[in-house]
Length: 274
Image (cartoon, rainbow, N blue to C red; front, side, top):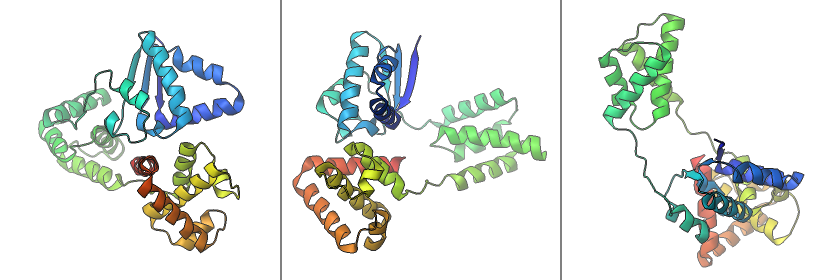
């Protein structure tokens, strides 16, 4: 079977690349001939008109051919504010499952299975200790078992609770969110508005680019709390008053335009969830 896996934002990037290179036929063939299409973080296509149009036709082609489509998202379809209605209804055609963090017994089973795959034996008390402290993230459970093996092989540490404690401590301390950069914000806004980061930082004044630039300034201010002068510097050396005006325009638009408000909310959520 032809199984294709892609992330929502990567689908957008591949579509843009195909349009620029004139390879849309190859792009269509890759996704529309799949037996199983797996799309992770589908919420990242929301608000992106060209991407949603493309995915709509891809979805229909696969659905009519009775192929399997599996989508994941950080929220139910109805809560993705800028998702087109025609996609929303299609996403709700199938089975919607709310995947919760694993319970204690499942965490125990995951640790045992990972230890078995890595060729190490852990006592039940060590396994229970790990399962009681890492409750929400399966990757953390797997990472802790890998660290246990590494400590054992490289440093000769025994596979006991003390070593488990060290492994878990490393994981928890390293589990910090990646800081949001201005570049990430501009990239997300540019994808949503169908422009480029270069356009947003440029002096171009077309309506779409100007709107994208104002939204990018607004989101940068909301997320980073950077001073207006600093934001102006990041956006091509614009002055303080230009940034203030841009933010005020966005604030006015999101109050009177529900679609704009939903777009800005989705952009902000997508950036914070990355």
